[in-house]
Image (cartoon, rainbow, N blue to C red; front, side):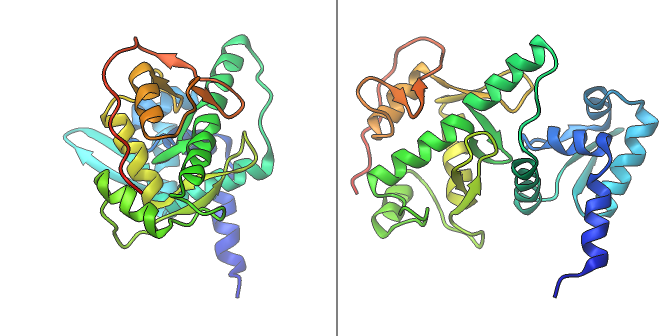
Length: 245
């Protein structure tokens, strides 16, 4: 049975524009200081502190204190999934400046959705994994797909292995869950994917293009679904041998 009070409480927490801006920034999966979030949201330190307290008390955020600094992050993947679903329901916002348009286009090309890849890059990853037989059409990990992931270093945990997360720009699902988080983390560690500034935007590097092609996630021409690969960095390095499936 739906708890009307709980639903109203969550809706009330996210109905404020400043709190929405804070949650949107934290969708990059990193912990931010109260000062950083205040600058991002364009509000005073005292104001952002009040909002953070409400979000922490409401279970949306968790906080960590390190010396005099107060760091906050989303309470977990379940919160990120809720926020992404709400954004997808509301539809994309029209950029109101050239800078906003540039940022928006970068997020469309590729971004992190809390701890996994989204945007055109994330949807391309999902398509490549389906083609390889790692994922089923319903985005469930297949038996050979689990072997493939474990050869890359994946260790299953209590978290759901895979889930379809609706992409708010591409309007089709990308891969979430433990497998999606593992692949995103692996690609960042190998510098196959690199963050763009302090935003959620990410780019596939030249080394990443080689690595993805070696894994069978890109065709010989290095094309993504919907367009040419956006590169960051210089060509070089050797692609890993794809794990046997």
